Length: 99
Image (tube, rainbow, N blue to C red; front, side, top):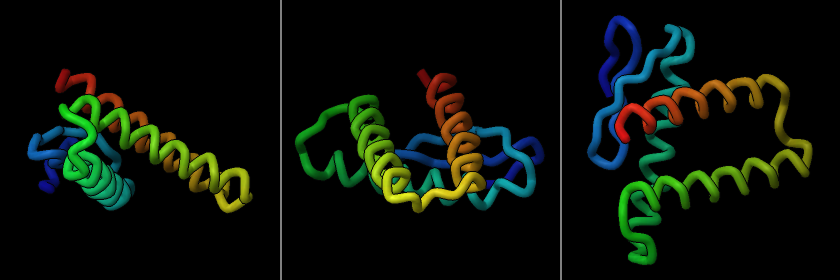
């Protein structure tokens, strides 16, 4: 993952995405992209889902389910919620540009 002046270039499933990101959030964005890449590769490697878009949707559903479980347990702070919303917005924007 490369840092550039206006943001960060992340690689997910072998494709590069340029994502605008404030300096203080770059590490979090890079970690989120790596996490998403791992989840998508796990789904792809299972052989049950074919296609990058379907892998992305399944990964998003799995991550959303995990997030909702954590919220039910009360383990998500408002700060974490804010960071998750920020990262989700960035990931959505990158995927829209690629599509």
